[in-house]
Length: 359
Ligand code: IPM
Ligand code: MG
Image (cartoon, rainbow, N blue to C red; front, side):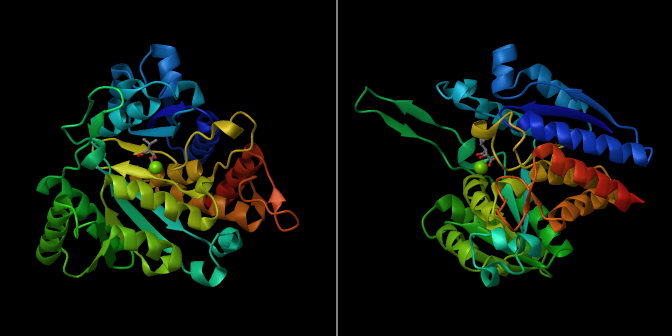
């Protein structure tokens, strides 16, 4: 296993360190060769190279088996614009690796139901997967422009999808629905946007031709946002475009009580990109407070993708064990109910329990 690690900014390095240490120990326990290379991304790459994602890093990523990324961005780089923003670096590596399918699973274990902003009966049974299109739509659509004189400026982006772009991500989502609960909900805004009308037609046609065993429904994005907070357990797989997926996945992520829990895998090209959904959390960076779970679970998704399901299962068992033991980082800790743990302490518990689960 040859992994490119891009810790990035803010809490990225702290959580990446723990994930790499965990992967190293798990691989060692099973005699799986494990090697890492590290480089800069986002703000740290701006500081080191004057570019949030230099081509040299992209080349390393393409040569690796997988890329593990922490988080990018922070107040230090907030005044930068356009291609110099840390976020542009993230978009560039997604595009360059052609990882068009972004998987964001949200399962709320019973141990976390109390931390959810929803009532326990509303959250019970939530186990969904957001499949977000990641390399197209309004994030990348051309033309885009900001022009005009100060005070009278005009700006626009373009939400654009081709049949092929919709079909390939829909195929990934249907395949996951087949493996999971057999249901797919495609989310769009087809009552207003012509791009969504094409989206809906392509998904419907693919369903009829190749996936009629999967139960398909369509939902407008505004309703989907509401349904996610009213009765999230109704969803199995949600398929949606880049912008809607960005928004809905944050809403879904917080169902478990913290954004610090949600992992992601971006797939579709020859090299996968694995990153937590949370950002760089500059307010708590460097203090050992960050929740490492999203990064650890992203690593588990990577292990699955690299055909190490036994290690992935052990790692997930380790995370579950830490939660069952009542360990919580500050984002989820409740005085008198859980045991407060730092990034290191929680990760250490996960590692020990994961190694034990491996036997
Ligand atoms: C995400 C993030 C990114 C996105 C930002 C940092 C560019 O919000 O991965 O959800 O919008 O895709
Ligand atoms: Mg987001």
